[in-house]
Image (cartoon, rainbow, N blue to C red; front, side):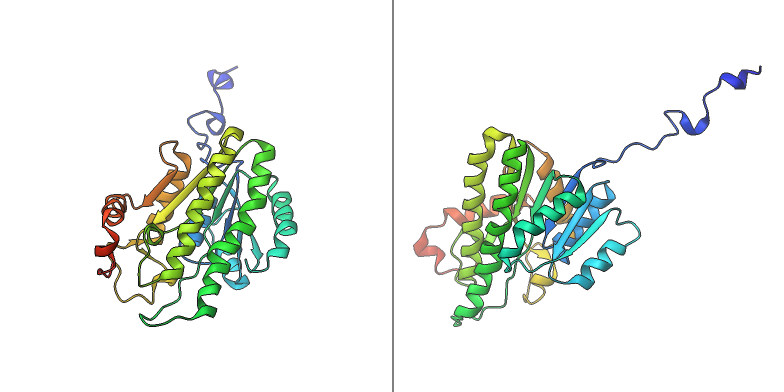
Length: 267
């Protein structure tokens, strides 16, 4: 018997084994996953080892996302968030496909261009349907699931636009303000069940949704925003977080401006 007969095999030695990925064995659902921050969240979660359900209207974009070489385990589910009757059964299928659920992100949203003198009810109600109605229709059953299993993390993508009533986008800001209040209510309701509810308020992010804007102030990439969102979702320090963090003092200043003065601004 040689000395090597007792030596551990190189492939089985602790140093040779790859470190387990952060999300190995965990399951995530991202609604609004076909582009922008939603797509980046899917990519990063899958890369970390999560099994991810990607939900959005556009099947082709979802299939392309799932087929990316580094995507990992991504399950594509085509769905329009306005089809609220489909959601309970679809969520059940997703949970079954993933083998459970640990993290849920609502990233779906629409922000059409609104003229300074435009009062388009059809356009406004479309924002209400997606940004608020769809958010509630998806988040309620997820909250019920996490309540029953006594655990899980809910992440809602709001906006700094919901911090004040801006003249440029009355209904978009109103939907984000309402979503933030809804998430706060869920946070208070679910706290005793060990369920985290995180509200994310992005500033200017370079996504297809903001492509029509003339100028973005202090923009960040969707990739960076997604990285910060996931970091915040894992931290116990924040329940509400502006992304990137530099928008927090901006928000504090904006919210402190008296209404009489604020209406004269174009913020």
